[in-house]
Amino acid sequence: MKKYLAEMFGTMVLVLMGCGVAVSLSCNYAEPATVIGTAMAFGLSVVAMAYTIGGISGCHINPAITLGVFLSGKMSGKDAVGYMIAQVVGAFIGSTLLYLLTQNAGLIGTGANDLQDAGVTVVGGLLAEIIFTCVFVLVVLGATSKTNGATNNFAGLAIGLSLILIHLACIRYTGTSVNPARSIAPAFYAGGSALQHLWIFIVGPFIGACCAAGIWKVIETEK
Image (tube, rainbow, N blue to C red; front, top):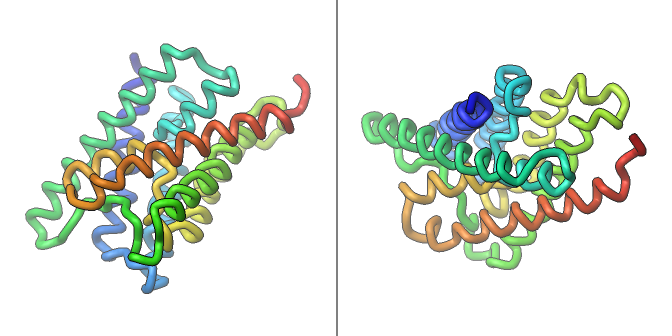
């Protein structure tokens, strides 16, 4: 039970801090400073939680990562389902706290993902989420693998930095999800097109995670 609680807490922090910075900075892809600040907030949140709960649950705090780990044969189906439920619950707690803060501070939104403008099609958004989630989950699988030399000693740092990079590249298209839990909760409060397009931020990351697991099985070193 402790590992599920750890995942819940970690995901809460990720959503509260990452989405909280996005709201506070009014993140807009046309304003580079807001993009950099938001990217760093999500990446640093992952680093902080990796070294806080990594020894308890592995610090997935992302259903796509949990799916990738499950498909790689590193966790049971029961734990995978438990992790995902805990992550979504944690995201809702984080979004609720953020909603209460913004409503009492004159700020708008809870950092929901959506297609960033009319030029980004549904297919474009879906492709972005698939591609960047694949890269992110592949980094997680490689950085945490015990068969990949000593890299797992710095896994938290590598994963957090890669998430910063992914946000810098992907915010222009979808605001960057690569994490279904991170998208589900804020969309609930945002409604409208964020809720209408929510499926993109669930299906895309899950497909990306499957691709990453497949790639890792091909390139993983022998035990």
